[in-house]
Amino acid sequence: MAIPAFQDQRERPDDDDGYFADLRDSRNDWDSPSNSYARPTWNGPSHAAERPSWDNLPDWPEPEPTPLSAPADPYRRDAIVVESNTSPTGWKAGTGFPMPEDDRPPAEATSGNRLFTVLLFFSGLATSVALWLFDTQAGAVGDTASLMLATGRVTGLVGGYLLFIQLLMMSRVSWLEEWVGSRDLLRWHRWLGTSLLVAVLAHIVTIVYGYALLAETPVVDQAWSVITTFPEMISATVATGLLVLLSFTSIRWLRTHLPYEFWHLIHLTGYLVLLLGYGHQVATGADLSGRFASYFWPGLGALVLAALVWGRIVEPVWLNARHRFSVAEVVAEGANTFSIYIAAKNLEKLPAQAGQFMRWRFLNANGWWQSHPFSLSAAPNKDWLRLTVTVAGRHTAKLGELRPGTPVWAEGPFGTFTAQRRTRRRALLIAGGSGIAPIRALLEDMPPDTIVIYRASRPDELVFRAELEELAEERDAWVRYIVGSRTDPGPRRLFTEDGLRGLVPDVNRRDVYLCGPPGLVNAAVATLKQLDVPDSQLHLDPFEF
Image (cartoon, rainbow, N blue to C red; front, side, top):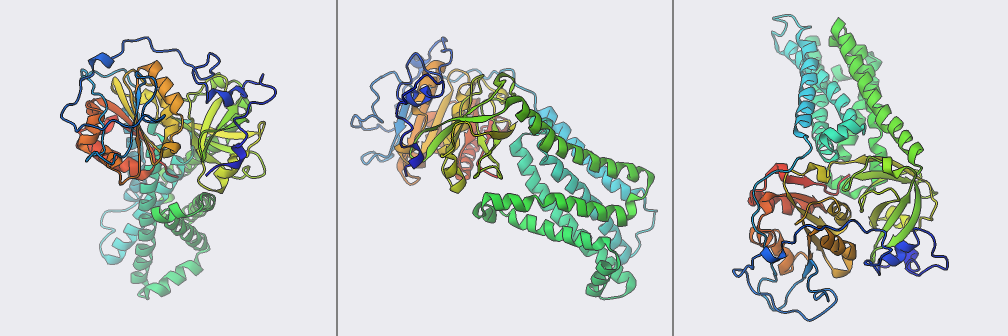
């Protein structure tokens, strides 16, 4: 599907003096001296002569010479694997690599930060439960009614604490993103969301049932009496209803079928849940009247509020005031893919790394009211940033019509999908579809002998081929394209033990970076586990919101 907005993008303008105007021509002349993407070449030794052949794998029939299957340069570090109608396996193995020594490079220490974060979480949870424990006399729980009330008080404290932590994790404060990473924060947020809903529902059921036993009244009558007698219970009931709605719309199947804008609007009500729930806890919470509790609970709320203000307001305002982002150029990359080049001031001070993403809000009539996350598709430099978009709906299609000079509001950078998280001397990068964007950027920061596996359904879906192959030459890396439908022999064999080991014999001695649709990521992770790749060497950036 062609994008009409890009039909004239590759025509040379009358005035070619502009910096970004050259980007149109650089797609067709990647090796030209004026290439803006050029990086210092890698002068280290090449390992091509050391690579053994793999005689135990089936022979691949000689293909007909085509621009895709037979590049003119016999030394180019790329290969395409497509379905073969004559080979029983449809597979062509890449060249092998000598097994390297098991030595680890200096890597950023992150496990300590994560462990410290987990300890802080459980310390706060234990302190919250202790508010009830130290406010309850020995022997106070002696019958069913008192047990139900005690359970309700404890689950109420647990639910209130989890609500604070939920909002803290989504505050986007930079230190929490760096310590844990956006992906793990999202996973923890979902897991704690389920725990929060269970705790709140258990709190309601046990409290109402306990009071019904004490008053010797039906449960339904007691519930109605509680709601109508205490004004704060009305706000608590509304908060519970909103929480149930948030949890329902977070179901994976429903989330993938809802428009992103609608889903995001619903989840903004999480702030209202906090306000309504906090008022209920302070007004009716029996365990929050003690001296320590009167400091701990408001202090926890103040911490969350400060993090939200800092991460959602202060940091974005400072970032955009310093850099003043704007659209510089929109350039077609493929049939339904295009890149947006972002110009800005003081880009050398932007703390972004290859592989990270930012949230972008384009301040025009179509996009000012919504922001979306897009990864950087080239390593940051002092002149421009680049994000690459694959059309997946009305919003992304409209982005292709952006005009140069359109102001941009950005937040971030976010994510730990970076080369600084490596623990090994070599790396394997696996991309599927538009997941090639952060993978292509990461290749600029990766060590020699990095292998890139790029999965696509059709050859015309491959983007950045010239850039990937040029970077492979410069950095002594290797690119393998796996093209075809999921039922074709080659793609089917890719994520099998024999298939992946055939392409990357030393896979369990490499850091593995994966980015693509959930199906591709899950299949790759399952195969990597079978090949004994440790969790510490897996770096995932799947497509989720």
